[in-house]
Picture 1: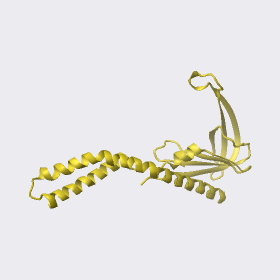
Picture 2: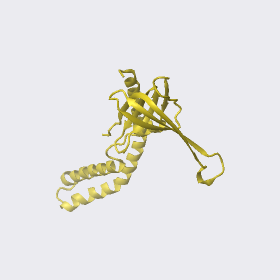
Picture 3: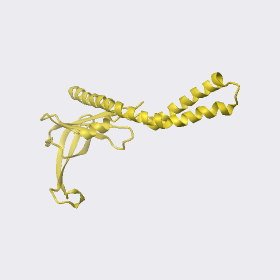
Picture 4: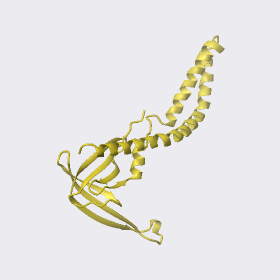
Length: 197
C-alpha cells in the first residue's frame, strides 16, 4: 500500500522579507523575451516554539510584509529528500498561493510494487495454478519436469501481457487516486487553518 503524504503546516509572524530577481535568457539561445524569476525569502518566527526559520518562494502572487501572520503548507513525501511546498497563505490579508506542481507531486501515490512486480506476482500465481492442475488433474502419472515445464512456459509467455495490463491499470487508477489524495490534502490544510493557532 502506498504511503500518503504527511502534511506540515508552519504558522508564524514574518520578521523580515527579502526580494531578488534573476533574468535568464530565452532557452536554447533563441531570440525573445528573457525569463524573469522573482524570488521572495521570508523569515518567520513560528507560533509553536518561537524559533525563526527562513523559507524561499519563486514567482509567488502573495504579498508579504513584516508583521504579517503567515502559514506555509508543505508535504513530506516518501522518497523526496526535502518537503514539497503546497501553499503560502497570508493570514493577515487572506491571500493564498497554491503550488499546483507541489500538489501534483504530493498527491502522486505510487504503490510499493510497480507494474513490473505486479506482473511477476501474477505470472507466479499462473505458474502455481498451472503446476497444481498439471500435477494433480491432467497428468499425475508424468514426471516432475512435465509438471513444471508447461506451467513455467505459460507464465513466461503471460508475463508481457500481465505487465502491459498492469501499466494500463495503474495509469487509469493513478489519476483518480491522485485526485482524491490532492482533495484530502487541501481539505486538511483548510481544517488546520480553521483550528486553533
